[in-house]
Image (cartoon, rainbow, N blue to C red):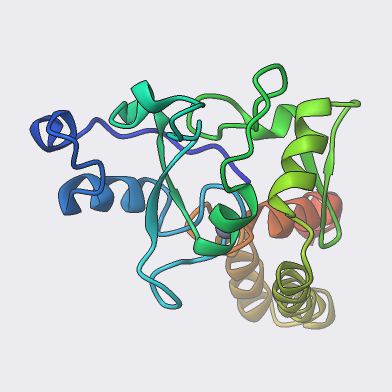
Amino acid sequence: MIKINRPTCPNEKALASGNYKHPENKKALSEASNDKCMYCESKISHIDFGHVEHIKPKAEDKYPELTCEWSNLGYVCPKCNNKKSDKYHQDQPYIDPYSECPADHLYALGWLILQKNGSERGEITIRDIDLNRVELIEKRQTRIMEIQKAMDACYRTQNKTLRDAAIKQLHAESSPDKEYSLFVKSMLDTHSGQTSSI
Ligand SMILES: [Zn+2]
C-alpha cells in the first residue's frame, strides 16, 4: 500500500444521483492509483474490470450516508474487496491511502508487509484484508527476483554504459506506477548506498 492522491471528482452530478460507479469517476480513481488496487498494489484491469468500492461500508447498519461520498470511494481489486467485505472497525479504521500516509503504519520486509511501530490499525488492515495472502507473496517474490537480477547486472558489469542503464532501470521499477512498488523501493533502499556509489 502506498500513498495515493485523491483526484477531484469529475462527475459530481452522477455521484449525487446515486451512481457511484460512473465510468468517468471510476476512470479518475483508476488513473490516480495507476490502475492499481488501493490496498494490495496489484494492477487490476488486465485481470479484472476493477471496482469502485466503499472505504467505510455502505451497508444499512454501517455508513449508508457515505454511499455517494467521494472521499469514501476507492479503487479496489475484487480479492481485497472480498476480504474486506463489510468489516470495519470504527475505533481502528483501515489505513486509507487516499487520506493518510500508509508508510506511517506499514512497511515492507522482503515480500511481506508488516505493521510499523506497533500500529494496531496497520495490523488490523493487514489481517482483515489478508495483505500477505499466498498469491500476493508469490507475485511480490517474482518482482523482487526480477529486481535482484537487474541488481546483479549492476554489480557485475564493468561497462559504465551498461551499468548506468541497469541502475536507471532499477530505479524506474520502484516508481508508483509499477506493481508492488513498496516492496521494490524497500529493497532498493536497502542497497541504495551501494547502487549509488557504483
Ligand atoms: Zn487488492
